[in-house]
Length: 138
Image 1 (cartoon, one colour):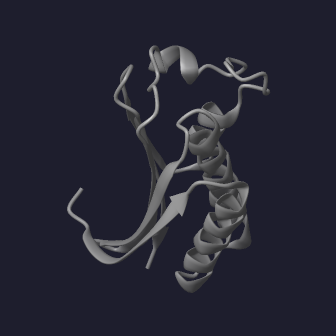
Image 2 (image 1 turned 180 degrees about the vertical axis):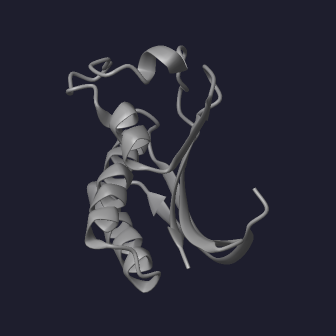
Image 3 (image 1 turned 60 degrees about the horizontal axis):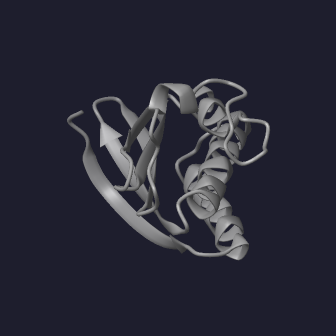
């Protein structure tokens, strides 16, 4: 992706209050970029799920929001990074209904459906990085 970064914000994720703060940061960035209410809702929902996963399964971490400009479009990319136990089987973790924590098992797979781009890096003992991106034409 040949995109120029035009802004970056980092937020720590150590408590439920931080999850609420990240949701607000994501919404504020999307509003400033002119995204529709539907796209705002999709990304805030995905960010909320991933932030909660960072807390619950990764033991906390951080969220990095990056505003992107690419040829003819602008976007917001959000990475959720932790140094927790990692994910042993990423394909299985992305399956609807799969959970290790008693939830509905829709967090990762749901976030993937709500974003335009979804990327996950994880391995046992090395933590997890999930990045979602939403694009909007200029």
